[in-house]
Image (cartoon, rainbow, N blue to C red):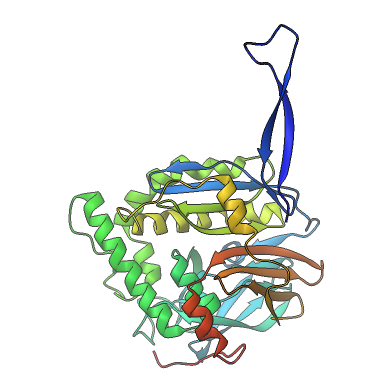
Length: 364
């Protein structure tokens, strides 16, 4: 990881005509990725990351695109923490960690990024339930398969509970916590009591994220930030809420990032709404994002798990709680998505006492 400084020539208004002065201007880069200054809307700041994509010549469909086109089917297996996926299409499908699939016996979130090859049958998906208590058909949904993917986890704590701690009880706890935060903040914003829980299933995170009251609040923020995706050579973003960096996400295929953008942006806006009115720190700068990204060193603790013939999932972490999750496309022999996060150090200690790669089946 490197810090790059460039020098630009500019005229000083007090200097003689025709004389220029060299004024240093810092360009912050991590592994060839430039960190740009943020755009802030209310308590949310977004830093667009720009650079050269390295995974080219390969088309990835998002899970939402593939399910809408009826090319991918996500199925129940009878286990809370494992689903199955078929890809009948001709494109590779990139399933993003934190993607929520709606329907089945319970709404689920997918634990890790995974790439699904064309013409794949019965590929296993590690999952966690984001709805508690239901284990039957809901309304007119089909109980053996899932109907759609329109949302993703919208809380740093939720993402870590599923992706790092792999703790179903913690996931449920953080779902309840986020809904409570949203009820409190939206009630203040909208001027009347708000409950994002839906009558069809009061425990469902998916249905809470579909709330019309939430939509009213997030749409105005979305409109101010949506065009950031048009930043030339955008391949990722960092975000801060109330002056605290919550994460950095980088994609090595620009079209994949563009296709994911709407769902990503919605998720960070919802997270920011849930944190509105809390204690704030000074707004972060690009240099602080640089420091955040370079906290993990190559000699820190590493783990790796081969999820299927195409996907390798790696982590590098240190004792101070900094971690980088990296998803590798084994066919391209390059990373496709990197996620930089900070973890409560107590969670690190708990994870060290867990058996590696254990999937827990729990009662709903």
